[in-house]
Image 1 (spheres, rainbow, N blue to C red):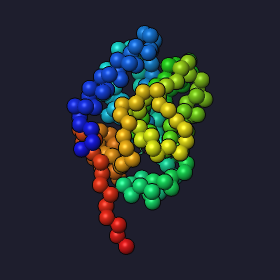
Image 2 (cartoon, rainbow, N blue to C red):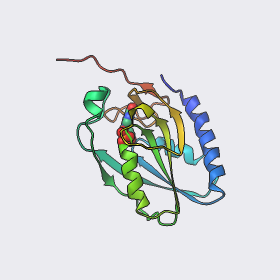
Image 3 (tube, helix red, strand yellow):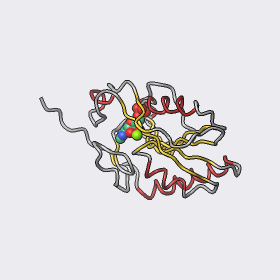
Amino acid sequence: MLISGEQIASRVIEMGRQITNDCGGQAVVFVGVLKGAAIFLSDLVRQVEVDASFDFIGVASYGNPRGPKQEKIWDSTGEVRLTKDVEHSLRDQNVILVEDILDTGLTLSFLKRLLLGHQPKSFRVAVLLDKTSRRKLAFEADYVGFTIPDAFVVGYGLDYAEKYRNLRDIYVLPTPPAVD
Ligand code: IMP
Ligand code: MG
């Protein structure tokens, strides 16, 4: 186990307070990245004391699927494509994009460019986890729950092959032994 459900809950309360303070009473649209951020978003929005609405956006990476064999598998994802767009225009809205994990930065760089095209009034990014050492594109989130080392993690929304999203804590998935 890397981060317990209790640690997550108290950090999410702090992040909610920080967002509440930064919003100055203005309404916010939270945009969650499917599917991993759904659990984080649902906990976070309940800790924010401003008028909030939410929407979801979906993306997929080209190339091989992600997995615990880090270099071989996930470094080959080069590009991101949209699988589900937001339902409402974000024009003149205060937008907070909510993501489970910031890794290479490809996904959030792509989504930031896309959502800025809506001409929101303000745009910020909240991530639960940040693997700073894996960045390929420079990207900084405005709100970060935890900075973590370079390991493949699951739980609290994060999956491996669609499994483990419902775990309450966050775990490191061990790298399976190489088979030849
Ligand atoms: P990026 O585009 O490389 O920053 O990757 C972001 C996406 O990769 C996240 O939205 C996650 O879905 C996925 N991802 C990256 N690292 C992990 C991990 O350790 N566990 C599960 N998913 C991950
Ligand atoms: Mg994701």
